[in-house]
Image (cartoon, rainbow, N blue to C red; front, side, top):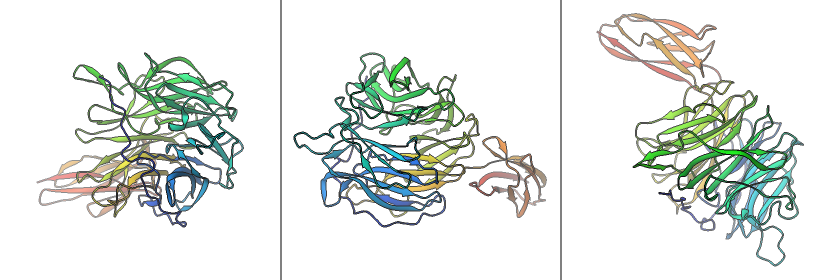
Length: 490
């Protein structure tokens, strides 16, 4: 049985949007700052960081005062988290599909890609996929004259883009007729297809990533084609945009349910990232009908890494980003026991082979009991993760909003022994994705100690005259804290 393509809950033109807000200050990691109201609940921004550390967000909103039209807009987010003003890239288009992408171009500037139709006028030259560029400071934006791809239905598709090693942009999209990749900005160049095995239909939400060591490029997408469901990848020749070799399905992206292969679709770009230093990774949810694991798979490896798991509560909105040191961040969301969305993330070691402590950011305050989370889009710095998430904007008519926060990497704290009688010298170990953290402070039972070069610290606890439980906490500059529970027996 084929899984159904999920429908957008909110129509593109049905949302009233506020005018651009003035610049707003960001807060410490974990505090959310509102960016603005996108045009749909399945909207997803394109994010790219310029050399000065500024994160640039390209996104779509309904035109203020004209909900039947769309604006493509741009917002800057400083390296420290301050959210700047929103400026208009293109105004009052007939329609813009709200999942767009943005790349840092070879000259250090910005280039955005989107599907849309500027107008229904005879002779309109923007009716499929368009592009605009800007210098590194984000202004002004210059619209590329005419479509950069034409004739394959990209005006109503999410767009995923990446640069080849020579700096040429490639971009991907998908329709009911299959998936497509286009190289460069010339619409006369061919739109090469990539196909799920079988009929070649049913590809959704593709994205591209480059291996910076081998120069290989990969496209990832979701398929709900019968007997070929799940998340797929295929290599792309970056010199042409043509698919090569055979597509491969992500291990664990389908589940045997009642004797049939089934999968769960995420309504966002398929998360794929090239790691600095080599390797391309895909993040995805696993399980059906409830997704209970988040997996990260390096293309070509034997098995995926289980980044998160839960026994009964759904994990969704997987996302992945690479930082400049070769580390990977995997993010996802999960509702807490009260139904409030929470964004979670873990950072890997510099090889991308092991992940550290879980960090989290609860939904922004004041959204009401009806808030939901629809997408998570991350961008990694050397020491922090920027996250743009699409939340229901309170209970006011189903409107949605992009919010931004930052997350610091998480520590992991271990203790030996964790259970003791009356008195013990407990050895604590503090690590970051398996690597020892020196200089961390560990506190427990009113005492504290600092970890050595091996990440270890010893604290003598007790004697205690009765049974109790203690909480030990580890803190270190630049990290989110970690805790471990200790048990004292009589």
